Image 1 (cartoon, one colour):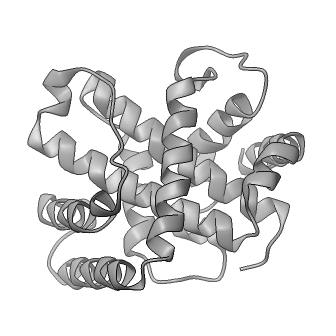
Image 2 (cartoon, rainbow, N blue to C red):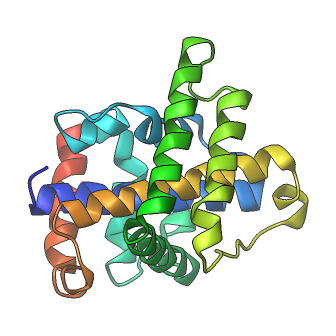
Length: 212
C-alpha cells in the first residue's frame, strides 16, 4: 500500500465509519446494513490491490468520509455527523489498541488464525450470517479485548445488553482496529493526525465528490 494522503484519508474514514456503526447500535439498536457489510468485508476479504476495494469502493466509505470531515473540522454539522468527543475517544482507543496488538506477535497470530477460521465458514454462510458474526466477535473477545484497555461503549443499556447487538459491536470494533492498521500502513501517525487535518478534509471532500 502506498503511503499517501488518499490512503490515509480512506483508512481514517473507515475507522470513523466503524465507530459510527457502534454508535448506531448503542443508541438505536440497529445499524445501517451497507455500513455493517463493508466493515465485515474489510475483515474477511483477501488483501486486494487498493485500500478502497476492501470496502466495496470509495462509495462504501461515504459515511466515514463525511464523519471524518466534521470530526477533523470545527464541529459544524448536525446529527451523528457533528463533532463528537465520544467518537474522538473511540478513535484514539482503537489506534492505541492496534499499536499494542501489532507489538504482540502471539496475540496478532491468534487474531489472524481466528479470522482465517471465519473465512473458511464463507463456504457455507454469507459474510454477515449470525454464525460468522458470532465467530468474529469471539475472536475480538479473546484477542483485542484482552490486551486492554477495554473500550467502554456509551448508549442505551437495552440495546447494549442484547447479545446480537453486543456481537455486532465487537465486530465493528475489530474492523476499526483493522482500519487503524491500514492507517499506520499508509503512513499515518499522531503527527499526521495533528498537522494534516486540513489536507485530509480536502481529500475527503474530493473523494466524496468522486463517488457521487
